[in-house]
Length: 413
Image 1 (cartoon, one colour):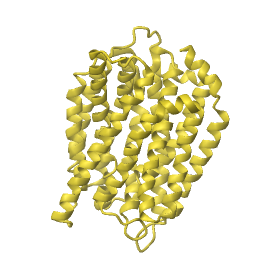
Image 2 (cartoon, rainbow, N blue to C red):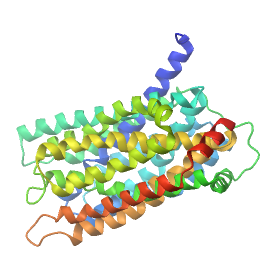
Image 3 (tube, rainbow, N blue to C red):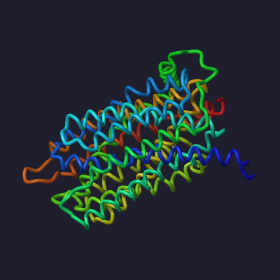
């Protein structure tokens, strides 16, 4: 049956929201590592700057989920957050010291990270059925790809014009511009008011009480474990790809483009997510998503041939689509309607918050610890840590997650 015009328009508006939401993060999340190396930051300092997003995920979702569930329309709160966070990125663009860079990215993270849960909540509230979420969320990945391809062309231009003058730091400027656009765009989104069914003012704590459901608790715990390895990818892969001594030795524009291949694969796998959920079930789908991580890191540890290392970026599609988006859907189906925004915030708390905070601390120290005196790093040793961690997470999840009980609980909702 063809979609009604109103349905098509809502789909278009929500897709545009996801496009801009993740284009902001994608603009600076990859390239800022190279920018900080150019500024002379140590591995610990780089990890501390990246770690601000984890701190933001720990602090902000508590407020954001409560506001979205109880007080203010989600789209209004998101608009305010994006405009203010754009100012922070604009200021960060001109910083050259660790202290000021950390402060500006920290303030940006406090404002930006809760908007991930808010945009998820807006999408779930307005699209009518949770099975459509993957078709909308995929545009967030498209946004990440678009900005990174654009930045790759931009950097390639400057590499040709003057290779001695780095422009990697301009990623912060592009992130600021998109943040301002997103802030204005949020004001045009469908209204997503606080839940009329809400009765408990402490929605975040109420969402945490859902851990009495074993499957809900397993999802949170495994999400925490898996998130620990994410900084090894987001923080270190660009440095690994561009390092001449013991890395792959790609140019900044080529490394940035190579990492975007993961998001290209994510688009394809996102479209296959719901068929896989129907054919394989939630348990097997998420299990396969976790297993793709150790395969990718094993290829990184070997480090050659270059085409295989670059091609292994596409495994990110299985990792993210099957595990994280699948997990978002599972959390949504296991949560009562009046606290679903807070449940998404709780998931963000355990992944982008606690898990990635641990990962930032560990990855930064390993980056410095396995640095050679004459330059370069022992990348094979660094990547052994996420290999072991993700294999362990896959085994534990497969043993503890009960597919039959999940289907019963999901159908009950």
